[in-house]
Structures are given as C-alpha cells and as structure tokens.
Amino acid sequence: MLRGNDLRYGWVARLFHWLMALLLLALFATGWWATELSYYDPLYNTVPHWHRSLGVLAGLLICLRLAWLLVDRRPPHPPQQPAWERLAAGATHWLLYGLMIAVPVTGYLLSTADGRPVDVFGLFQVPALLPRSSGREEIAADLHYYLAFGGAWLVLLHIAAALKHALIDRDGVLRRMIG
Image (cartoon, rainbow, N blue to C red; front, top):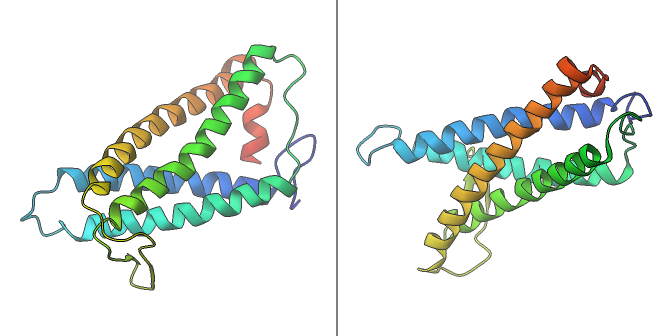
C-alpha cells in the first residue's frame, strides 16, 4: 500500500516518518557531541562534518516528505478523540514540520557564514548562496541551537502522545504508523 487510507498510513509516509526519526536522533546526538569537542580533539572536524552532512540529508528528506504530504491520504483522527487533542496534535505536527525546515536552514546559514560550501559526505557540495558575513554566524548559531532543543522537546511530546494512545487510549493511533 503506497498511499495511506482510512485505517493506516501508507508505506511511503511510514518510511519518511521513521527515516526522519532516526535522522533527527543522529542529528541531535552529533550536534550535542560536536559542541562538547575541544579544538584538539581528533574528531573536532569529523563530527561536525557528519552533522552537517546529515543536516543536508534531513533538509532534502523533509522537502520530499512535505511534497508527499500534498498527495498522500492520511487516516482521520479517532472519532472518540476530544477536539482539544485533535487541535493539539495538528499544532504539534505543523510545529514539527516547521522546525524540520527551520533547523536545517539555520544550520546551513551557520555553516556557510564564512562563504564556503557545505561538503556532504565527500559526495557533493551545497554552495554558499549568501556572501560571507561576520554577523550571521552568531545569530544562526543561536537560532539553530534553540530551535533544535525546542524540536527535541516537541519530539518528546509527540512520543508521549503516541504512547498515551497505545497504552491508555488503546485507539490504534500508534499502530497506524507502525504498520
């Protein structure tokens, strides 16, 4: 089942969801790790390179995911779900989508503030679209940091809601995404 229906998400949506979940976990881990490395650490250049490369991959994946969202069919909310939960779920999902766009953009602005392109796993480069800027790096770094942590909290809320649906409500919401 390529596309979703009234009972569950299609395999493409599920693939996007779980790939993005793994990618976000890897990005958060490598981002945190990169900030803890000292200048003399042998991984000082390697871990940020992985983080930037994964960030470009995440940016591409979220674009594909949003494009798929336009043509895919999603299962409706359970009929017994209160209106406030539907509103909260919708707001959380849209905030997550917004952050999955904003965090890679701020990371890109941070990474290209010196005018150099972003190397992606040594396979290709994403060029710096803006000229070198001395003030952009600090602003982009702060935004990237706070948006990433805000996104991490939203992901935890998303996981908690999924577990609530599975363990307390037992309404099948989580099973629709698991398959």
